[in-house]
Image 1 (tube, rainbow, N blue to C red):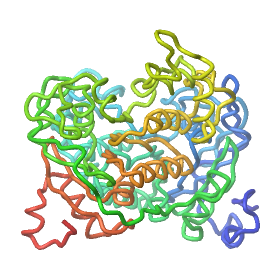
Image 2: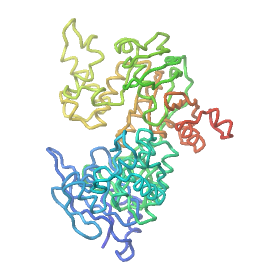
Image 3: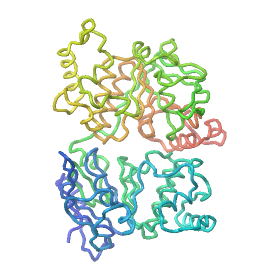
Image 4: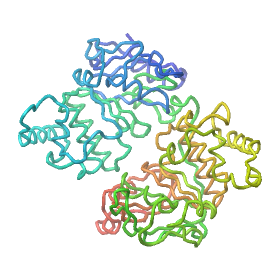
Length: 547
């Protein structure tokens, strides 16, 4: 029986890889999970269209697909969060029905979500025991602390069981999630975008852990949009597009990143960024000794200083929660600045309203595109005119000229390739990539001389990411200054001329980027700074950088 097939690019080099992988069942490891003919419908959407998926024992199987391809739906079915409308699930050869995540856990299947499900005020051990039938009356925490410490030693997941969750780094919290699943007896682990919030060194540690788990008989399903990570860690790859399988069980080492990207979006994708050499102009944004507090009233920015010049992209690197978002909000006028100031074209913009920044050439692409960057129940037209409805031709005195607004929206729809039936469609019905295009169209159409872009490609597929990168580089070519805040280190290196690294609201150093390809020395240096090592200390220890 053939256990892997390809229904897309049948004449590509992938055909040879798939053919080479076709062997008899006797020569292959047994199947840990077998999903056959899975169908799942939501109102107006066929999320999974007769999907087949196989996971072998002792393998890391990557699952790829663009936004809305059906990956998460398929894995939520396997984890017991959804129930399929049709199709069967076999675990170790036995057909099972899952009505809840508890059923899936009993079958040995656990899912580690991108956003951790932990209680910050409780210890590691208390989080792992939460919801279990044992212990029932007496906690005996010391006994369970030892059990969890031993489990961590077995799989290389070092974490102090007595530490409270809020005291742990993001990477350590992820280890707790893994320990929670292992403690419950999971043999199959579904990892949903597991590297999205990790520094490079933490990613290396996670990969070592996953290889250790696989070596001890566990199986891993690895959901990611980072094609280089898939190529480095996965044994096999499956791809979904629009709810259907376009590649099943392809050996990861027999397929290029370009071919994977093409299978995901159905067309050729330019993975390399075409960043032309450019001499930056005068300083547009100047941030001086800025201090600010987070939403809890605690210090989050502690004396940050940086600048951005015309015609350059400056990146801000840091693990999530180290002050990057608060910095963007101070610049945009959305958060008070307790000390210091941010200057735009020599004029103070910190502690002013957002309208002042808009009128002085600032555009802002926020992290939360749904609740901050757009008004979900309003149409595409209403969303794209939000920054210029006071100006002609859209404004006629105190009245709006809706025919001019509709014409303006239609022009942006075509120019930015926004896929939507009409410009009167509410933006809540748009995919993540199309909603981001609406926001970028609105922000760029005002011809800003400064742009803050916060996580502009988060959650987008490779095709949408390609489009966002092109738009940011177009702004650079037009001599705008761009401050790019991203947790995707490769994206920062590819697009940025310079990168600042912040940790716990403090500046760890500034590095000049030469070339658009990731350099291991550069990646290592940035990774060390992201975890709290200042650049000066890295230089003292003899690590060469481009700084």
